[in-house]
Image (tube, rainbow, N blue to C red; front, top):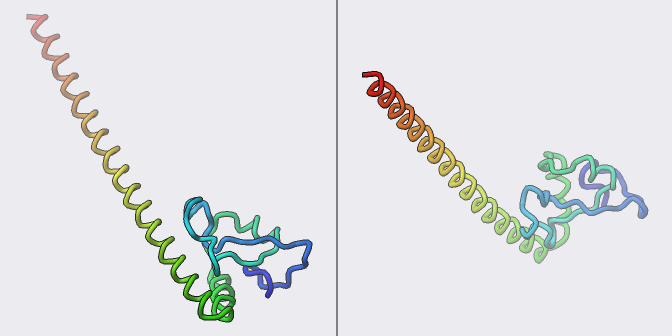
Length: 129
């Protein structure tokens, strides 16, 4: 099998293993490095890809490698992808909740600032009388 990223053959001294779902995207504890989700790649290709999502050709090459590996690997890969998807969903839900809380606090702070400003102006007005 060649490099999952570029498709070219990989020399033994140029081997690296590419996480199909980058660890930075899936989280370091996510099971994206299980059977069927780590592929052979050139060191340079792997570094260049960095945290980018898989390209269509890469998906095609990776899925072909999984399909040719047999039913057990296919089942494990699908299970790992399902688990990674659930982890992503939980991360997205946490991000959404955090975003909502930040916006809510910003609105509260803005209201408090407006009230303080109004109180300050009222005090200035009553002191002038």
